Length: 224
Image 1 (cartoon, rainbow, N blue to C red):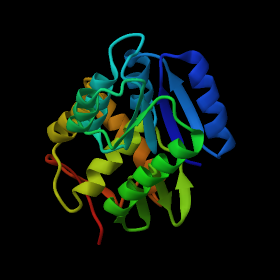
Image 2: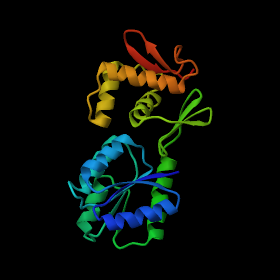
Image 3: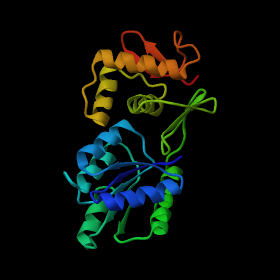
C-alpha cells in the first residue's frame, strides 16, 4: 500500500483529501505544520509527500528542502498561490510537481502516480545476497518476504547496500546517519541498530554473512 505524507494547514481540506486518498488505496499521515511534518518524515518512509506552502509553523519550502536533503522522496506542492515566482521557487528547491488549488481529486491522483512512476524508473532495486531494498517504495525484503524495519534501521541498511564491499568506519556510519536524521548517534546506539539489523536480515545473526565486522576498522556489506 503506497504511503503518503499530507502537510496542509487547512484541516477541513486535509480531511477531504485523506478520505479520497484512503478510498484509492493509499495510507495517509497528516501534519499541519513544519515541525510535525519533519518528525513524521524521520519516523516513516513515504512514497510521496503532498505539501502546502503556508503552514501553521514554518513553511513548505523549508520542509521540501529538508526532505530533499535526506533522500529523493517525490514532493508535490499543493497551494492556492498561482504566482509564477512561487512555482519557480518550488521547483528550484527540488519539488517534483506543483498543483494549484482548487484541484480535482482525479488530477491530483494522476500527478501522484506520474511522479511516483518516474521515481520508480530512476531508482533501481538494491540487492545484497538474498536481501533487497526498493528505495522508492521503502520496502526491504528477504527471500521475497517483506521485513519490518524502523526508519533508522532502514536508512542504515540503505547506507550499507549503497556502498557494498566498501569498508565503512564507525565514524563514517555515525556521520551518515547524523546527516539523515540530524540526531547524534553514539557508539552504543550504532551497536544496537547493527545488532537489530542482523537479527532481521541474517540467517544466523551470531555469524553474519551480509553485514560483517572488520575488526578494529568498521563494517562492510558483503555480496559474495
